[in-house]
Image (cartoon, rainbow, N blue to C red):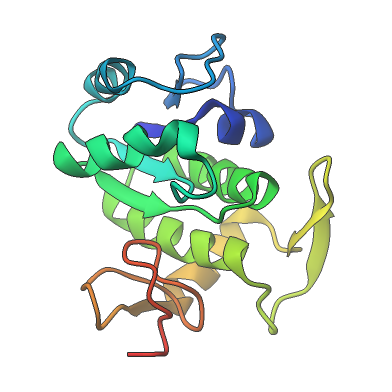
Length: 178
């Protein structure tokens, strides 16, 4: 499964030159605002099974076409946290898991990872990550993958799912508020 995200998130995740990740604008080229044609090119290159990871349009207006066109083209879309460091951690974790090859399992893990990046879970130890020192679970990716499998809950609002008490990565509704 190919992951599609903004160049800034890919860079924060350390994924700028990684196979299986498409960043908009195309890797190695920066733009202040991404055009619809460039988004179409990236999504076409990524294929129909691509997972689009986007920050909310109000947090990253230059990349707003990525989410909108991804939805129109029927790609799976998960809303990352608005802050680049937290979004980068989630993207790095999802990219590590994407190498396992099971897209169904990856989607559930990714939904929980996005929730974990949005909130600090009370039952996991935390550690600083990245240049900005964002606090993330101090658990290895394999153990965290197993934990995500157990922590996943369905969203009663949209039918997607994610981590309890976190915003749903598909519709944004708090998982425990519906």
